[in-house]
Image 1 (cartoon, rainbow, N blue to C red):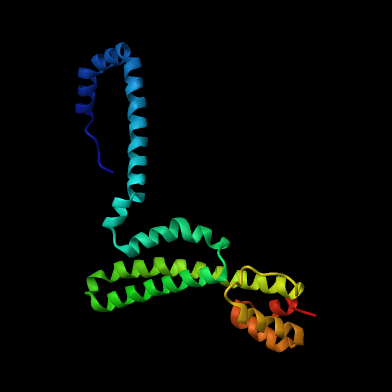
Image 2 (tube, one colour; image 1 turned 60 degrees about the horizontal axis):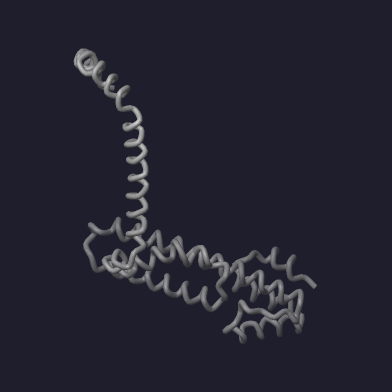
Length: 200
């Protein structure tokens, strides 16, 4: 650690210290109001920067994929739990498309941009992992509900009626091995867990 020269600091304190103390004593309330103003001005500036990032003008200047990434982080990923399977599959395809675009750009452009592309790929892959996990979990949950109650009406599988019908047929036929294989393929669960949850 560097040594600070003490003599100039002492000289400065002796020269301006008494005057500064008198000034603070005389103008104390005004100084405290000014400090409060500076604090509130800092908050206003922070809010302004945050709102600017969300404004249409800011979004117009940015690359559409960057804008979409911001939407995924702030709106879409937190709302995955309320989407049906069709909507989840739609966002999954979009994210996979963005990942393919970045890989293509990485191949075409110079190696200097490789770290930038790697970060983008990682960010989009993180979102893709969350979407795939949500699809697998919701599928498994809905399959359990249908298995335990054949008359259960499922809004989640709207648009996937054939897949749902195939599952119901396997349940009705009581073909356990075929059912287990189907669930292994569609839900990313272990066979032992499936056997426990889907036993007759």
